[in-house]
Amino acid sequence: MKRMSLRILALLCALCLLCVPACAETSDGAEEPEKVRFSDVSESDWFYEPVCYLAERDILRGFEDGTFRPRDTLTEMQLMKLMLKPFMPGEVEEPSGAQWWMPYAEFGLREGILTVEDLASLEEPASRLRVAELLARLPLLPESEDHPAEPDREGILAQIADLEEIPEEYLDAVIAVYGAGIMQGYDDGCFHGERTLTRAEGAAVILRLMLPSERQPKLRHTVPEEWFSDALILGNSHCGGLSMYGDLALPDFSFSYGGSVFSGLDMSCRDRHERSFTLRSLLQEKQYGKIILVYGTNEMGYDIDYLRPRFAAFLDKLAEVQPDARFWLCTAPPVNPDMIGEQELPVFTVANCRAINALIRELAEERGFGVIDVYSLFADEEGVLPPESTGDGIHLTIECYRSWGRYLASAVVQEGEAEAAAGEEPPTEEETPSEEEPPSEEEPPEEEPPASEEEDP
Image 1: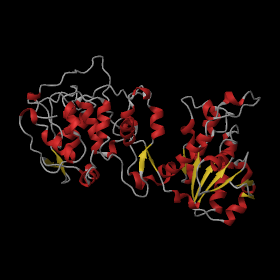
Image 2: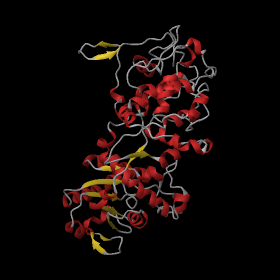
Image 3: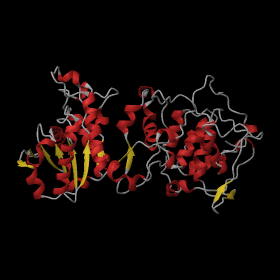
Image 4: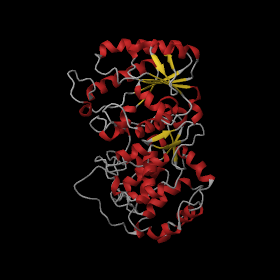
């Protein structure tokens, strides 16, 4: 496939500003497209907004009888038009009859989005795998030279329950559309790639393609390695694991085995070269631009009301000694109580881990610090550290520390610098329309509407 033209890239960046003719004037003088009505689409339908938005902009049309037929199966031919028309400049003149799709096919071939082989299956129902494959050929991710975005591959793979059912040749495409927030799974956690989309579901997908504010992206915004050149990673033995196995060459490390916030600034620390010093001497000797704190594990089991003022005092003292630094707090990694063994006073429990992490988030929010969610990176569905990720129920394996190190490069941006890189905060689950229609007892019809009755999708 030939490389996509720069015109497509530029048009993608402008999609959220898209507005075509057929506008009416609002009370404040602004223009908005005239409402397009279909007899079988009402305001109470979950797909009302996506269908109306695309119809008002002439991205989709209905049938001669005034219906949209939202539950009919979307064909690849119809999908091709929906995904390509927003990029095409000017008005598109469609031939009458069965060849109405030709302008879109020619455009897709010319721009390197489609191949000749794609045209062989235009009359087939559009499976979710096929939709992902075609959409992934578009530049879906936000452009940023400072903080390039990439799909959160590990996080996406971990949440797809039917991952083994996705053919290898489609996997990268599924990750791409998940990462961009264009498609998402069902309530059972599965992608169900073999299923087809209804016309209503197709409208919801294309709405997300055109309006980034409607997406729920699963991205990592990475920072260049040089970002860590003025950074200090400070903490307990987990910090020591990061220094040895996290593949982070530039930041300074200061850690203490068994270290906690109770030790204060006079705790004895060491760096990756096994040099010993006190934390106070290090912080007085060098001013850092960024400080990432790794605490919480050795604080588990303390009464939260007792711990809160002492943890707060430690953070405030750090900020006083390092007034120019920006701070991030890592949540404590999960633990595996069964591997730790019997204890008269159980300390390393799931409940205590969650309690300490709630406190970490609370203290960070009060001070405007970022939070790096290490807990969710490693916890299973029960909030437990999986046995394959630890040797003693507390400390992590080498590969997990490497994953943590890779995660830091994206998490610091997501929590502290992502606004400029990623734009608006994504909407919550409740606010975002799903491309999956709520299940009904009857499956939507599989047959495609007669071509002669439909002008175009």
